[in-house]
Length: 546
Image (tube, rainbow, N blue to C red; front, side, top):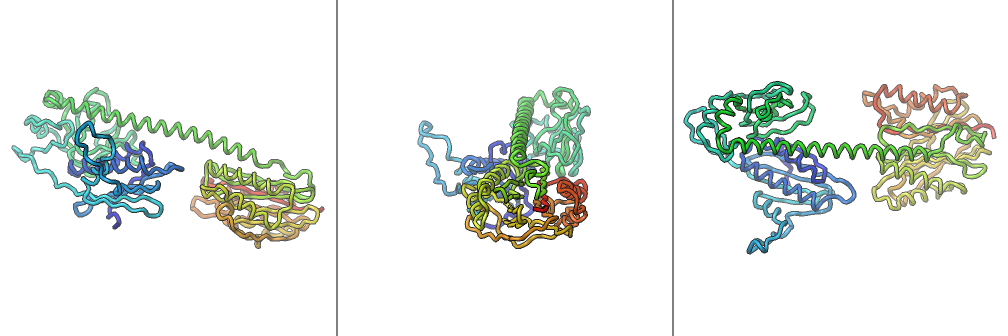
């Protein structure tokens, strides 16, 4: 299938029925200025297609989303829909037989036939694990002009309050009313002001906003709709700002002309009531949807806060972390970002001589990352306690993390095993930034040689450890990439060089808690007020005399 021609209007919807109201608003903006019959067919076909996706192609393990792209070229409307649900080809559905009688009729199954009927072409393909449906509809020619008694006569058949009504008195009112042409962005109505006009949108599209902020998402007003009707009905001041979303032609009917000359015509007040009711219903649906989203958001915040508390409670605390081992001084700190992440650290004795410290970083954010982090800590402790880690330590841990990991989460992990008697250190690394080592108060340098991929994705991965021996006074710092990838307002990253320089500035004799605090302060100074986007975890270790 060819690409959707440019210029293209796009929309992304969540794969649930609450998105249908947003689709209707977006379609009203896109179809502004098209012939009524074309708008009718496009609305029917798009709504049917999106509803089919929501009913039959919704992902089972996530909310999912639907992407729409629409363009008009060479008298054709080209629409492409893409969703990440299970395979569903509407073009492969067999046509449902037409019942012989009303008694034999059954609901459902005719939507595909309507789509086939109203489109000139309907294509489906499965690409990159996504459904892609492409529809082509012809654009109807503009309606013929109505016979006019003068050049000032307007075709009002598409104006909602005049639907089904033909009366020369309408022509007279429209001809004597104010005719306005608005450029894109020009304001028609200001909120909080007296209004004495009923505005009829003959051409173009407009938006109603509660504030004057241009960035606010407005309520679409399509060609043929009336504006300012509430002020005319209740005599109150206007409640919203109304702006032209493009070039617009509007007729302003004074309230006296409306009540004295138009309202008495059969059908006008009925149509106006329908318009007001429809808008109130749409407003209520938007309000209920917004309220539901707010309640869901508040509930999610409580769940994430609880997850963060559980995470932090799972980690070891204390200064130092091994008070029963004066041979080492260890301090760690995790500075969480606003959103729940997956950073972790751990520190526990393996036996009377050996200690294990680790720092890790789980992929992603939110509840999945928090749960995978807890699983990692639990497995790390179960594999590390009571037996000295060997070359099978990370492969075994990786294999256990791969089991049941259908969400494809992963964790980077740096693990250090230290003999407090000899200073011998074994370093294991699974895709994590290398630790930084300072010998005898000298500059910090990266400890390389321990190699391995991140854990949790591929069960058959090899890891290579690194052995070295610490002398009294040597310092080792483990950290997460929240340190080196911290950004300033210019989007520059802190990087490893700045990290090492900040560590070098801290006196060699300073406590490990001071070293950690000094690095955190260096990160904050570099960020210069930029929001922290990732967890920051630092663990510092000093080896003393055995």
